[in-house]
Image (tube, rainbow, N blue to C red; front, side):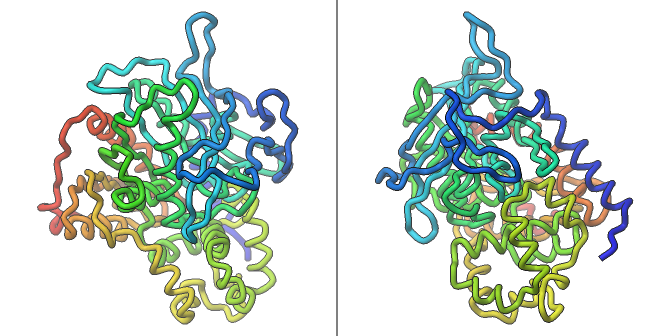
Length: 449
């Protein structure tokens, strides 16, 4: 397939411009503290032995498996004073995956240098990262250590770092989850899996209490912050919290551009600059549902199989460079799109439908924000999530981020609202952990765009 060079360059330029604002320090090799030898290598990047889970995990969800100091790539250590914006700890904790089995999750906890001036104990914000990719070198915790990585084989950018640092500056502790299988070397990342993502977020809140020298307590207010893949994870966590983690004092969730309906999202990303996300979705669902593998073998051609294998170790930058504007029809034996295969395969359709967010009402305030021109994670299905939650009695603050069309399929319409709306999102989270009441605008939803 011949790709328009101008579109490829434009997409990569937007990614670089929007994301490298966080690259405040040069890349450094991913090595564990104390010189721990790596146990895995992904696209030339050594994955520290810390990320290799033990054979036996703790019983309790959210219980720490191990911790070690984490050097922030964009931080500053002042002898006798402290570390800015805070002191980071790499963590591994236990969660339960969507099959009911124990799983190890890695991430990072950051104790802020700034004091908390609000009421109560220092609050916690759990950050659910947006799409990082599927290779272990792409994890957000490693992104905190080296905000940008380029070694000729992989490109990884810690684009969530700037939002994280803004919340630390306000005195809120931050816990970042890597999700199930991203970083941890024992399994493939279960990308956009509703239950895995929600559980990983909630158990991150539990784990933060036990990190050495953490000021987070069982009475600390907890808020969730996520955009794109992260918005899906925080939305799922908000739904699952009452049954799965009633001990977490959850006070609100920012749910930005959530892929609440994977069918609609697949249609949006097919043929776009981010078509790689289709491969990550298929890989992740096959990790959770092995019964998908025979269906994939039957329907994917050699090119499709090779793409899935390649993407299983790729970061988001790699996916944009290698697979921009491809159509899933080129990955199948029959020339059907993946959406067509979903529709004609009952097993696949049932698994996709089970991933839908919006069937339960969160019991805490949620803020759903979506760009009106977003065509990667389509605006209409994100807004529909807000409508569904409103209909079930949830307290929803819905924000349509109105912007001009910045280019169909170029991811510009998806990335820009993240940046434009970030201040409002951080302010909303700050208000929730400060104990201020949220205002629902559900009554206006039927007439908003």
